[in-house]
Image (cartoon, rainbow, N blue to C red; front, side, top):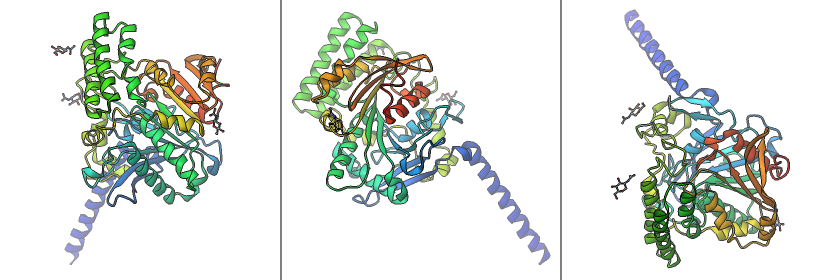
Length: 437
Ligand SMILES: *[C@@H]1O[C@H](CO)[C@@H](O)[C@H](O)[C@H]1NC(C)=O
Ligand SMILES: *[C@@H]1O[C@H](CO)[C@@H](O)[C@H](O)[C@H]1NC(C)=O
Ligand SMILES: *[C@@H]1O[C@H](CO)[C@@H](O)[C@H](O)[C@H]1NC(C)=O
């Protein structure tokens, strides 16, 4: 009897020791202070079994009481890339480095805002699509799924409903951001109750038929291709334009890939995301994705409340394939509607060859909006942060354009402080005045 008790006791002691070890290991990978305030899955009521992964961080140094404190939603591009790229590599409070550890971000986007990351569309990151058919194939479906997930988020946090809400994102989110914001504006007009206070797009892909024509000029101007190559690249661009105007969406997508492929091939660049980089974002020199190595550790999924058996990839091909007919379609018309209703910020890192400054300015010139002439008449000002030249700002009424100096495709990864100052002052409606020379 005594002996058995002792055996039980020592087994219990061993179990506890094992548990403590596991907990410590998880804590080491993911320090307690780095945990989101909440994370896990949001349901989409129209799609039984679908789950959208989210991570929410409250403001670190809140300047306003909770009911007035803005919430910023961040959407990743792709299509098919996970919001954890933004979270753990760009603008979140803790970021992964090559040592596969989390380091405190000295200038995250949740300094004075609540910050929400979603793995959108379902099928991306940790989000669950019951079948491939449940993965959206167009912007309208994406907006509806996002809206449902937001409703689930507010159901969990009813007190958040009064808080100003800003939709932001990058790259292919140049389509998601206007699509969701426009859907929210429409819902509001139909008596919906979710707030929408502004939309911001970083290095966005919004109006492909114009944007696909910018690559040759940009690459030639900075010496990355010669005149003959420029002429050839222009002919490839024209093919993509022609197929787009014929609404041959899949062929147009393939033609655009030829443009990007030729550019990459002839320039020999490691990535089109930033002409300065010798290694792509979140990769080791040998090409291994270190964000993927970090996120797939057991302790990380546990800490984030993700399904423990899920395999995380930064960008998922299944989603990209489902969205193939969407790639060359435009959402510029939604930006035009938004400009009549809410502030819109378009910002680009200066060294991006994918969706950069010229690429954006070219389609901005084609905007049909009654404020456009005034916008271009407004002076483009040098933007300084603590006396350091941070880029350029032009703003009129609901439209603001920012060029971010010394940044590529992933602006917050390259310029965390300047991107933080930018988003905070834009939300506070002071970017065009106070921060500018
Ligand atoms: C470009 O493509 C050709 C084949 O089409 C290949 O021979 C060449 O090595 C490529 N150049 C670069 C820089 O990748
Ligand atoms: C790439 O480099 C990293 C870090 O040096 C290393 O951990 C990894 O095993 C390497 N992968 C390959 C495929 O060589
Ligand atoms: C900007 O948005 C406001 C609503 O916030 C609207 O009243 C105004 O007409 C818009 N301005 C322009 C030039 O479209």
